[in-house]
Image (cartoon, rainbow, N blue to C red; front, side):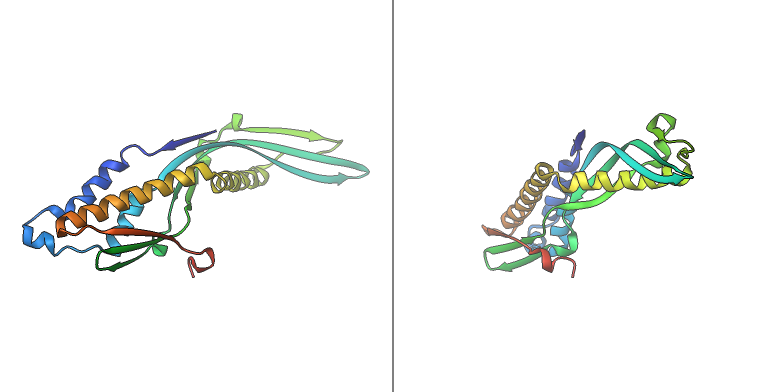
Length: 201
């Protein structure tokens, strides 16, 4: 299950996009398109998604002559922030042409509140004589696996990645167009994607 939260971000982005218009006309016309402002827009374009997941952890052992198995299921929910790595956003301005190079959308942060889990979040099953019941260490391991699974769900959520990519490009286009109006320049925008092997080097 997934729920995507993007409400309110557009209002903040709008404030940033028109910030340069404040002040005198002469001062405004000296404003330039900067990488720092582009990064700020990209940061505002990130979205938060709510994921729900059930993770299974299995431990097998042998007690005397009997094979045993302890299984633990944990139901958890997490909030994943998806966007672009700001350090990998590049910008070049050549007269009226603006070239924006963006990295691929990725998971920036995954938060699963361990304190929100209660007794109903865990479900256990033991098989075999002498099988051990899940202990605190196993619950902690199951929680870590739950975080990995939720992160993996988000990393494979191509629909949300496309949504974020469209938002990034839309807000950056609005920023560049707004700067062009201030400078009385009609910019042409070229979009490029940064290769994976050059990201975060």
